[in-house]
Image (cartoon, rainbow, N blue to C red; front, side):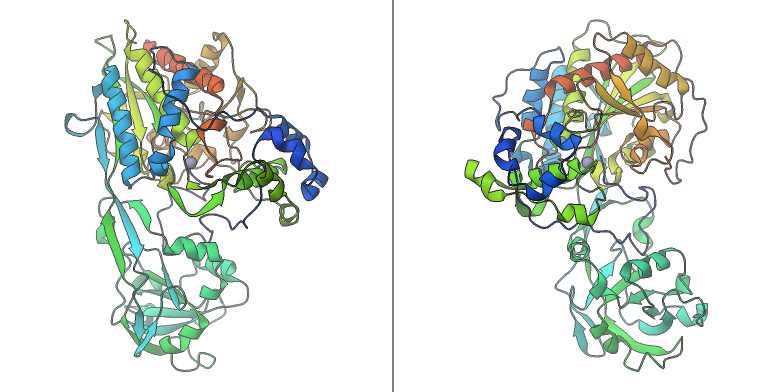
Length: 598
Ligand SMILES: [Zn+2]
């Protein structure tokens, strides 16, 4: 599942959201295993004072499984053992976090394709292969390049930082012009003619960087349309994690036409850099007053970043219906390797303590005072086991769990004598974490007719969901999102299938509520199908304290629960594939190119 953002469908604009890629978290101590909780809890002074029922439940959770698992051959039946074998391979450190656009995700997709082939599915990617190549590219700032103006060299990071690195306009030889105070509606405004072809330098009004950026995003862009870009002297106000994220390369889907239309250059500069850009006094400057001419602007690199979906078909048995598909999906990518290693046990104890304070995942907003009150005695932890430093995000649950479920369903259905009437389309998406890129590309460039897909069933994070992970969790816990948003009938089918199960699930629909702050409906691949009016069901066991952490590891997965969900999704797929009609769409279809709204 992708990180919570205002919207995935808002194209990157000149001003990205002023939010760090990862929230700043000081290095925190830790508690390794749940059975150590008694030894450690006495020293959890702050935490003890804040203990909640959830914390108590968390401490009662089962011990994790071993760190390593000897693989055994998988069978046609969907079993916890098969899923365990597959996930320990798929979420192994050697897979290096499966970031889309890196060799590690290509390796992951090679494994998936080999399994599809081994069990006998039909390739449905590009040119008779299992793969659909996705045009991702990586943009990076050249952090060694100086910006030169008036004979002075400004340095990346300390003097200037460019934002919105995707094809910004060149500012070599472009003159700076004063644009007035940011968001000052009473001030004189730059005319379109004054701004045309210029870099518009604003000064800050009252308030912090977030307010300045927010007011820019709100549309007070003055005469920007014809300008080359803008300069804001707010570099010193940015939080360090945001600066760090700007330094990191950014991998994006290059949509047709986008690469040829450079956007405005947005520069944040330090106050010390302003005199070079505008040698006169800004205090007495009139709006439109000319500044220096930039000799050389920021430099960027653009590198293709190969990535691919893996697509296969189990052919249907009914000659009349086999041209229709029930699509099953999961994402093969995760978030890669962190620049800094952390102590696994320490970070896990800290995130678990956050969870006990009500955080649905480690990125949730938590009252800073309560956050600061978390104290964990790291010495107690290391007394029991030395620190295990880790930088690899293995993504066992996200979305190793959905991926191995997809493979288990493939192996199971391929081994059955009587295929369902409709065909089953298996799509393993890449680039989900970077912004649903693989599913966007597949649904924009489907390898089967788009209208032949009668439903899409998405599995993302289906291997957790016990009471320590989520309020109301347990062996029968399953979250459903979007199941009736396009087709009431599809939602009803899921309920009906559940009634026939030996161990029915308790569905949690609370995350499907309109306007829910977690915005789950817009945060995984199913939405890319739904935007074209294809009914979807999103199956997940929900968020937890290892979400997007190095601690999302196979030893914390509940394989019984995972097998239970996998079998259920298989059963729903079979029911839909055997219907004599396609699920009726009785709700309005969204605008496929609009903004996702839950
Ligand atoms: Zn994710």
